Figure 1 (cartoon, rainbow, N blue to C red):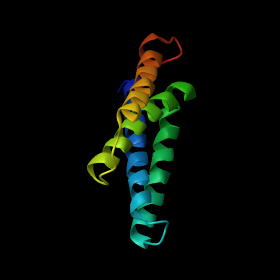
Figure 2: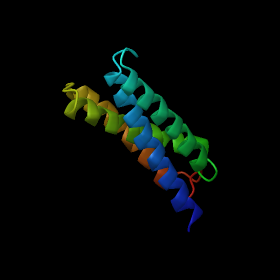
Figure 3: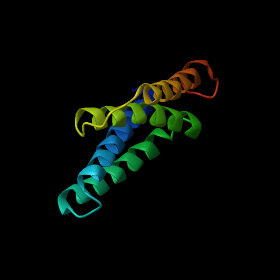
Figure 4: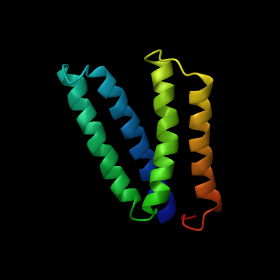
Length: 114
């Protein structure tokens, strides 16, 4: 299998694990609920494991830009859909700038792995 494809798969797993961990952090109610707290810790461990695997191929700056861009959008979506947290137009605008930055890095930068 293509190492680049595998690395981006690991990065996707890292992002999903981190978003799940962040969502469980909200559910843990400041670590007062044991089950969400334990699940959150496991998600963050998984996220960093998967990120470490992705970093075997993807440069740190590129991986972190993608992690940030996709992670912030997914976390905001979870906040909106599950926790009913409102997003105003400035929040959406700011997130779009982050996503555009990640896209520019991934498509135009010579630092990335294709």
